[in-house]
Amino acid sequence: MTDNYKIFNSRRPLIAILRGITPLEAESVSDVLIEAGISIIEVPLNSPQPFETIERMVKFHGENGIFGAGTVLREYDVYRVQEVGGKIIVSPNLNTLVIKKTKELNMHSIPGVFTATECFDALDSGADALKFFPASLLKEKNFQALHAVLPENTISIAVGGITENSFQSWLKVNINGFGLGSNLYKPGMLVEEVKLQAQKIVQAYDNAKTLY
Image (cartoon, rainbow, N blue to C red; front, side, top):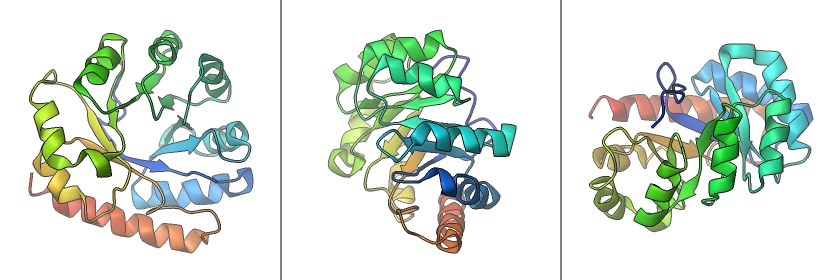
């Protein structure tokens, strides 16, 4: 973990993954998420007009949230995210060129990993945190084995199939945070529905965190 990775210091380690969100929803959806206590927000690049959505969130919230892109597969897209004010780059895979470009631009790098080799390649390339994806396939007991060989200060995020019912079992094996996708937001959801779901997720995380 690099000194630059400080976004979890004063925020819950919950990343909202808003796949399919449109620019018109940018302010309203991000507003209810931040109000509920989820202030790290990822807009996957296979969403409609993702760069415009990120830019609108950044301009609307300023430093009240940390915004960026997911499903980042190319170095060129790292530049584009930076141009609109994004600060985090999340990928489903390990691409060392994307990681290095992210760090070159002083942004936060969260690549997708699954094996020990990928974990160490990501960390050696400068990754700030590791996205264990898909967590539903990896499972807690296998992550526990990987965790045993990782550097002590590694930030590990479980993503893929995570719900509020998953928190306790993953925290028990020393996962640090979670990425929440369709359990939190799906295209077509009403803002009020997103708000209620976010509140439920935050309450479940806070309850689970008190146990570990």
